[in-house]
Length: 275
Image (tube, rainbow, N blue to C red; front, side, top):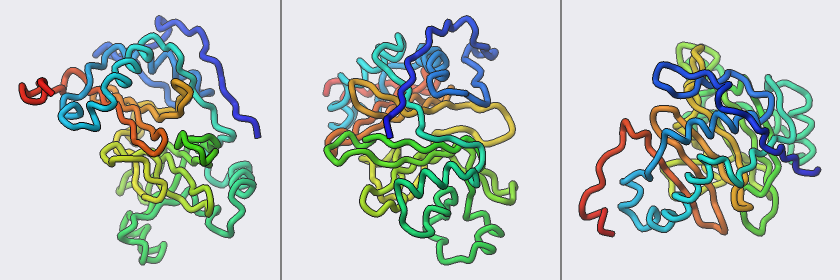
């Protein structure tokens, strides 16, 4: 199947509604991933420089030049493409989701459970017990499937599943953060894609991105997308008063850019500044 890209529209930022803090108010729904571009661009103006904590370590220094150029380009929305999913739906039982999963990963019943997430430490429980204790969540809205080389290596394309509303049946337990899961290329088992505090993308870990949408009935407070930049794929995530993250893996090396909102940035220590 051919990969679908959408060229960025020439949106003007004057049409974006803003809150009392001057930050954009994120719509509850985007028809296309490309429609996120003007909002991401508007948010980007409020972020930078790099997180001082990131620069204290060799890995952070390694990505410093790349990250600084990325933020410059993001603020101008230059050379950045928002990647469209190959299929999307508003509920997990939509047949086109299942048809796509079975086409790319025809491996038994697991495909039926790829929109259900169980905490690893409680996998021994029955589904009834999991529901009663809130250790299982279900994808509820904005479900998407991508097929791209998200690991930016010679292994080829991987299937990626996403949902931005992932909640327990009993709403008193609330909701989890959005899930970008990359499926193992060989056996289609589910693992996680973006782990902001891990040291690389690990296709076999089952954890989630802690800086995603705030899952309440209020308007979303964050925005995320898969983008293509410098001919590589990355996930970008913006929480409007906390962080702007870019994460990816290139030739088995993890790339992370972390730009805190100026309201929470910490001064860089003299010893770190001299490195």
